[in-house]
Amino acid sequence: MKKTILIILLFLIVFSGQLCGEIQSTHRALLMATLWHQTSAEYRALAYQAYNIAKLRLEEELKISREKKRAVIVDIDETVLDNSLYEGKIIKYGIGSNQDFDNWVNLAIGEPVPGALEFLQYAHENNVEIFYISNRSLRHMDGTLKNLQKLRFPQADEEHILLRDKSSDKGIRRNMVAENYEIVLLIGDNLIDFDDIFRKKNIEERFNWADSLKAEFGKRFVILPNSMYGEWEKSLYGGTRRIPEEEKEKKRLEHLKSY
Image (tube, rainbow, N blue to C red; front, side, top):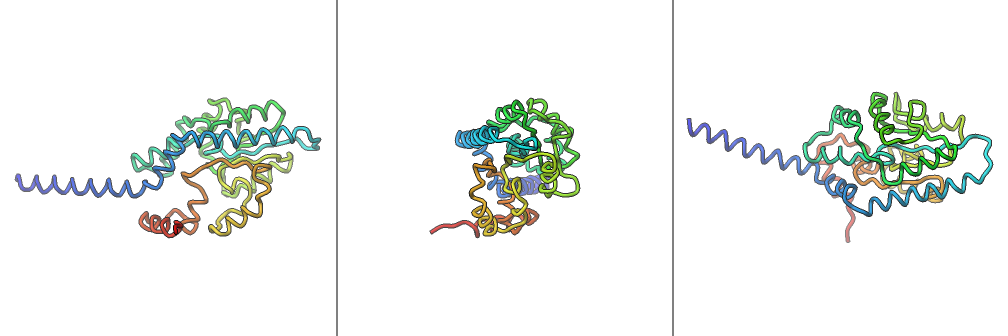
């Protein structure tokens, strides 16, 4: 009997060790990225810098006569709301399913990205329409509304929050806004927040398109830093995250440059 108990205990120790190793391997790439978001003053400074530039550009724009009413388009996640607490829970507890993200959204405890609230309040005070275009699903509307309204983000209502329905193509929703408004600024953390030419492209193609649009960055396009996730990460894995972790780590190392 004692021998059986000992064997079971040894099995549990080995199994738990393997599980911890797997969790560490799965999320160690995310750990430093998330810590940078949560602890570095450099991240805050970059976010403030982005929104300071946005305000300068909007101030310049307001001096111009327009036939249509002006609109600013902002992404939500990592552009106006900080989701790094959710990324932290992924790392610590190994969660990450759609249901887990649903639960996070419904908690409505995301904090504002530094500078976002002040800039959007300035836009609102100057009669600029604000549209929140996000690839959160329509089922996230209630939680998203609750979070934005709790933080007093202006124009946070169902008319101005355009979430993903059948298509993740944000260009469709941007075009809807453009029918009635002059889009003067687009603000996001992912290049697909600005133009759909960045969708499903490899690393070299993304570089080339970024180079071709370099005059727009800091002018009409304002980008926020996000090292935790995004199209850039998917491009490492050939356009999908749905591959085994061992293969992801292999591809990360393949793309790493050295001398």
